[in-house]
Image 1 (cartoon, rainbow, N blue to C red):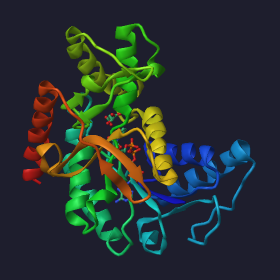
Image 2 (cartoon, rainbow, N blue to C red; image 1 turned 120 degrees about the vertical axis):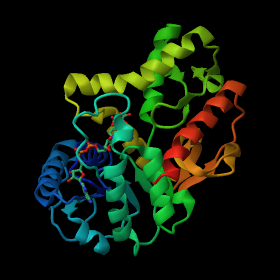
Image 3 (cartoon, rainbow, N blue to C red; image 1 turned 45 degrees about the vertical axis):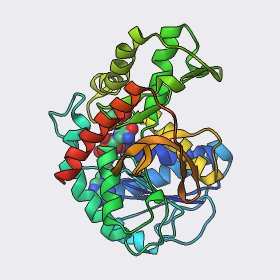
Image 4 (cartoon, rainbow, N blue to C red; image 1 turned 30 degrees about the vertical axis):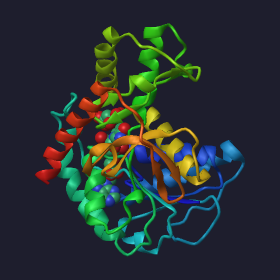
Length: 321
Ligand SMILES: NC(=O)c1ccc[n+]([C@@H]2O[C@H](COP(=O)([O-])OP(=O)(O)OC[C@H]3O[C@@H](n4cnc5c(N)ncnc54)[C@H](O)[C@@H]3O)[C@@H](O)[C@H]2O)c1
Ligand SMILES: O=C(O)C[C@H](O)C(=O)O
């Protein structure tokens, strides 16, 4: 498998490259970035890391020559010659200085829309492959890629899985259960309008009742924690570890060609949950083409209402784009 990371010199993109190369040494990784030197440096450093991870060390080169397991770098001009199986989009403009709170993702919209349009032009001649969008605001940018690239909608996936780990942490603490035994899926927007699907929460695989009195706290924790992390570490340093682990999980699921249990990711909707012309996180199974199936879960009345609110919020921006 050949994974091409656009914005490969970014904090998140380079960490995805490192994590994926460490876990799956045979996967080829190409870091594409306008910062050619930084992309080269990360590719070289990661290829040296593989010497320790897996006893492999493929020569790094800027060419697209097929070398199994190689970690390469190139600039966007080199995209044309690549033959990716999967694209990760992690390119971003520097985050506005004042964007330090929960509005930070939306504050990135205008600058990152321009980058999406530029990159979509560079991708136009490639064969359609899954595009995993990590750059914020995820739902709006996934939608933009879908609108400007004439590729099947199943190819477009927006990453929002970090929220599931955050939910497991807080729900576990509320219930006095170990976080790793908790599964609480999150639908809706990757942002303010998350929809924790409490009706599908599980502990040790069994349905669990979460007291309604805890819902507000749980939501607030999931919304706040990435910004508390960024505040303590520096606003340009977002949640790189959970994000890279989750992105790597999605890539490996696509590479494996299936996942039995649906996970919530953002994708274009065409009538599912009564919604269309928007990207929101919904339960999906994946295969090598992207989204294999959008699952139709029964939701509680309040979950449906929250999903409708997420739809309104994202649509309002999409209308103005
Ligand atoms: N979905 C999530 O859960 C999640 C989590 C964390 C961060 N993010 C988002 O990921 C994005 C990246 O964050 P980061 O801290 O890794 O970014 P960063 O600032 O470290 O890097 C951005 C990179 O994009 C490159 N770039 C800019 N324009 C480009 C173009 N046209 N082509 C190729 N490369 C280009 C830059 O040179 C830079 O290397 C942000 O939008 C951030 O909000 C999303
Ligand atoms: O990039 C951010 O500000 C937060 C990110 O979307 C995350 O959920 O970790």
